[in-house]
Length: 401
Image (cartoon, rainbow, N blue to C red):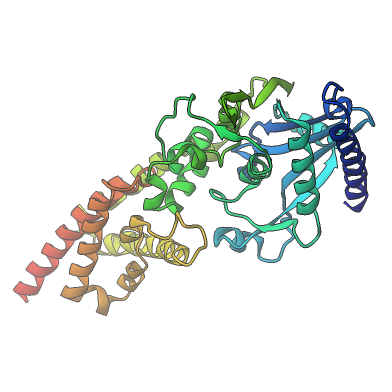
């Protein structure tokens, strides 16, 4: 990393000296070195790992005169970090900015079979210098680490901000038609072929993930930022405007992907199929609860255990730094209170049974205000109905006694 910081600063020094010389030169003289400095937005296609399903964004910094070609990457992390998974879930993961040779970047994405699109930015020499200085400052050891947030502060938003915040003009997206969508709908475009990843995201995301987004908020996804940049206009005032992107091309073209994972049993067993199977068991055991009491208790004990443990996860997410997971109405269905139903003295209490029924009822109502994970809404209504049925049976038995 130190070697590339030295290379980058050397390029920056030469560029700054050239830029100063050009300012002092006559107005008719051409900015030769400014033309040899090229800054591009790199947008990368999705990978096969869960963390790479949504693509990636980087910045390409080229000094054509001195044959320097570097990539600025804000998506560097390591699974070796202590408690990485827990830290990621609770929004406490630190990512780093890195500078790597373009050749290494290219070969990595080529080996992974992922496409890479380059959009060359239509920048003035002053804009290029401002961006280069900002990148150099950002790459200082005390500045290169940042607290990652999937929706608000990620590799794409970091790349966008360091580009547009260091340009003299105002970026105008007004001419581009914007379709209203939510965080959940945006990520569904990329994980819909990965049913379990989609289900897990929908399970953890709460009510705030369904609110309408502004155009800038949609730019947390690499492809959204790329589309917006392609249609963006730089407004310098006094009627002077120009397109933000001067040219666009694929460095690695998209290729048809074979759905090898579709042959896997785990991928054939979708969340909807599994939950439908569970619902059939729940209904059967409820209908037979008088004749097969042991089967009923065993079925619901497993159900209470699983939903209760899931409820603990959703409860823990309340304390996450991710703003979109704190208010999750699915917690009324996947409820930690269900664990107490494992104890006969508690589940036989009338007031506790009514409390659980009330939670299920609130969850059913909440499913009309929040998008639940596949199958959870149906599960909520089934649990509500079966709980009411079991409550009535219990009350009749109590009256007979």
